[in-house]
Image 1 (tube, rainbow, N blue to C red):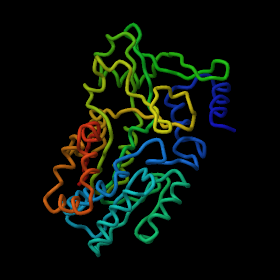
Image 2: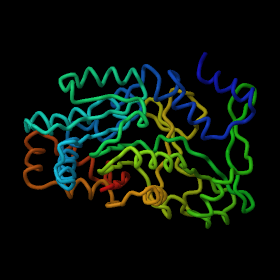
Image 3: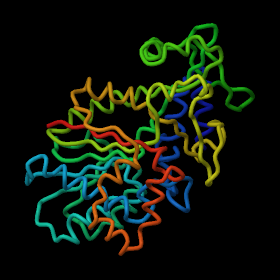
Image 4: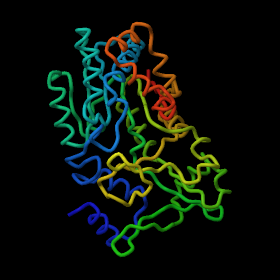
Length: 351
């Protein structure tokens, strides 16, 4: 049965479903969701790419940051790098090569990959087979034992299911998905209590803007708590596109940030190509910071990807980028016309 038909059956049985439930099924339904299907392609052949697809430059620079963090922790022998959603395995390959192969590092670093798609895991295993014994796979962060080290979230939070809300007559409504002759359509229902509480806390000014529509990502809150619980000591490196609270819910941004990617084209209709297109929303870094601190983390850093990456580029690293012909790819990571300003970096610590 096609995913669209599965969702239709659920709506027929249970009635309209909130948008975050629809988005969760569209992206993560076993074997049929966008991120769980067997033929998911990422990079040039797929619907999107991340910084790790621009050659080894991203992994090179992150390796330097990881070594600095290892030093700040007192250079412990027990040290793990954990990557959530590792895609095709490029970033893991680049980091492992830099930390273990090029330097012939004798430290007992381990690399944990959290991958929900067994087909992608097979691809990663093939790419990383020379590091057998150093790399370990898990299908959920909950399966990890307590660890210390660095955890990498590279464009993870933007793919969490979001709630979509709309303001009508100073009241908050949520978008639910229902059927209209076997096609998905929307209806507004009074918002759930925690949706209303979120807006009252983070964006009360939008209650005055009739027709204002945007998203909230409450799934980040529980996920950050889980990370804190699993980590004995260490750092969390977060890379994603997003804004501060005021930028996200500005008066000018009345339609939110929800976008869909299908075969390298962009659209704003999440009800097309069910299970075949990516659905994303920007990250509210103000909310993420607050929830991280409530979980127990310190927030050490929040700035643009451009400033973060440039701050790590000393003369030897720039010479290496030049020698390996990576300067143009580096520019795509740091220039405003590339990913330099659209993407933000947040570093959390538990020491």
